[in-house]
Image (cartoon, rainbow, N blue to C red; front, side, top):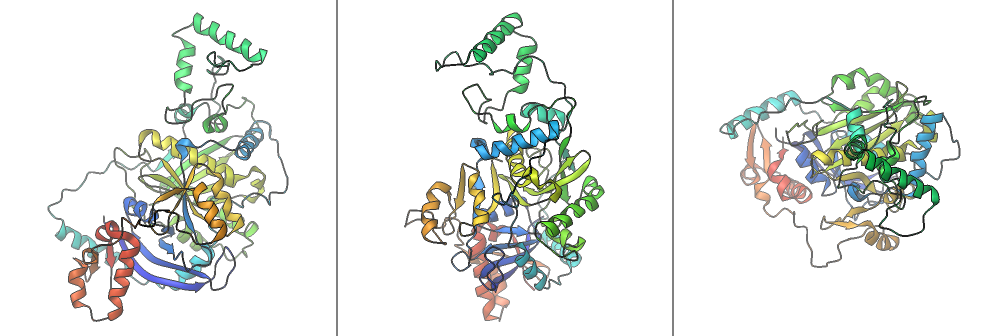
Amino acid sequence: MASVVEYKGLKAGYHCGYCDSREGKASCGMWAHSMTVQDYQDLIDRGWRRSGKYVYKPVMNQTCCPQYTIRCRPLQFQPSKSHKKVLKKMLKFLAKGEIFRRNYEDEPMDSTMEDAVAGDFALINKLDIKCDLKRLSSDLKESLESEEKKKEKHSKKEPCNELTHSQAIEEKLGSGEPSHSIKVHTVPKPGKGADLNKPPCRKAKEIRKERKMLKLMQQNPAGEFEGFHAQGQAPSSFPPKAKSNQPKSLEDLIFESLPENASHKLEVRVVRSSPPSSQFKATFQESYQVYKRYQMVIHKDPPDKPTVSQFTRFLCSSPLEAENPPTGPECGYGSFHQQYWLDGKIIAVGVIDILPYCVSSVYLYYDPDYSFLSLGVYSALREIAFTRQLHEKTSQLSYYYMGFYIHSCPKMKYKGQYRPSDLLCPETYVWVPIEQCLPPLENSKYCRFNQDPEAVDQGRSKEPDRVRVFHKKAIMPYSVYKKHQKDPSEEATVLQYASLVGQVCSERMLLFRT
């Protein structure tokens, strides 16, 4: 199925949720009736972002708070000191029920939230989209069949509606997931002793552990110790498992084994939200209630504002087509909810898109009663680990997109703390390490990060006549469509659309025109 989009053009002078400017925000947007994951991947690599089925791109040199697409590189990621504190806090809570309550004003409200969404949503509601989707779908199907009747249909792999982080997966990542009562081998973990090839001073305790390990290896060279070593070894593309003189990896910290009498059990489930899986439908009401409380307590929404309809349109509806290619991740590509279950109830939900090259974080909401667990930071770290897990089967899937980085908004700058990370140049659409971007952002809200003055947007629209248009039940190139158009503004609209989506997407997606 081809992507079908309805371009709405420039919307300027509306409320900004970041700086609270009444008329400072400017963006271009389109309604996506349907979209392939490859098209959306290519669009977010040009600065686009979705809110439900509305896909928008800030006008960076006009908007009051420029929003730069940010991505983290999970394969090289090492948690910072503050990240480790959050992970240890969670482990202590799960193991012993310890609660650390303090003022969390210095932490982000959440890790994946877009505060401007309220403004965007008001805009979406004003668009008054009246297109008959059933008729559109039928017309498109008819047109595609006549256009591509010689093309063989690709047989789809049976979709996998749910992916639970099973014991096998968690053990593969390191040790047991805190939520499961997994029997752990009593043999010491490999690498706990100091490395003999590295002479820096070591504690007597470490030397004793090392001797014990060597003895075990001599006694049982091909037995239980070796089996545990292979099972517990981190994938080679990740930072190596911790030795005494190396920091623990993200997986070491997240999946540290818990005592059998642990106070709490945490389980993370990934359920497909669009089209809704049976697991998603079964948990819809519980998930919505968490969202409603989150919006009311954290964002001070009145009780009548976070409705089921708003929740569905904003966080459940998605234009992304579910795809399950054999070479893709086990759960397939598309839109999902990553549910955090504590002792049998949902306490947080991360809304994510799984795309060909990345996991893209859309939103996070959680039960305010568990704010003390810093669930925004914790969920971001879990999503980074999840990206690394997906990368094992699907090697090109190796980035974690965190939405927009807004340097001029203090509470959105925390996204830059997940290193290494890159920002997208708003003019040439190349990725630039964040360290190079921060100094110029101190002097100007809007910056071109590509330092080569001769560089241009390589993916720009060069042949607008090749834009695919869907008009009156027929698919045609723009060169044919424009011959029948008398409205002088139509050409400017189509050219603007082509320049923003780029040549590749303009030739692949269908631009719906009435």
